[in-house]
Image 1: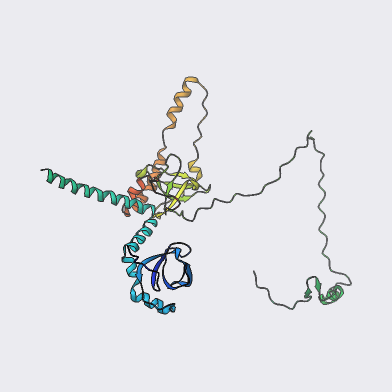
Image 2: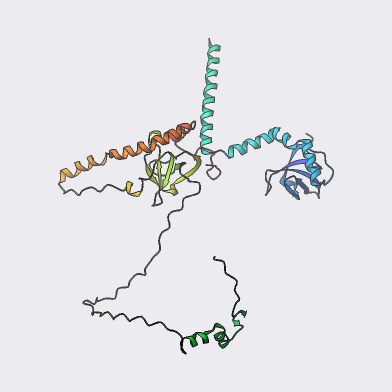
Length: 134
Length: 231
């Protein structure tokens, strides 16, 4: 199986450790075997160990170490945010966050909704079973 | 602080502990010589207050045999219990201990003893007007509109135990009488419960599913981590 996600300039990565946990950042330069220079519209450009990054499928078109403005423009042009939120990985993270922020009342309403849905499904299934049996 | 009017300082402090003018220079500056001159060579004095006649102290009638140490006086006053910021009137609370553990309950107000006044409402989950300690409660972020309720007559005295008259010990009567008297709740308290609950119930029924929520008990299920849960 060949590798598909490469460390390259313009690769979008997710920070998986440290202060910036959960942020999407763009690899803007490679420092050495272990570290990359990384940048994002809402953070100061800084170095990060590759171990702290999880590469994504998204890549944008930038030159080595672009100015902040150019970076932001490139990210808009490639619609990084949109692509991320449509991707299954991005959607999963959004759902996780939503679930974690649920109120006690919200959790109760969710439980009731699940029970109702299961009830409806079971009814339909029972109908179908009956049809087959008869 | 009141604004200090910047007047000229008569005797500025040059270095800490060293002022500009000497004692005699200050005497002159303050014009004490003029005050003396005005008053005929000496400072004006007010008349001494007439000494109050000394009270005659009688020798004590009784000298205790042992010297008993007096405990030190303590003038500390306990501060009223601070209410957690998450608990405001109308908050839904989860009771954690006691007969009603797990019940979700509406917070009404904090009493002067620091305990929280709470009601089920009674029709929804069987919790009456009751006092609960803040430490045994989780405050959720769900709020109920409590503006229609009058809570002025409820305080700690309302919940004090009724003092029973002492009965003379007749052996057979003793056991029977006790059993009969415990059960009845005075009608007045039932009326109070209804009065508080009717306005609350209107506010509760206005929110979908809130009534069933308050009727259900809270419990930890598999996978729920209390330190990660948002209440």
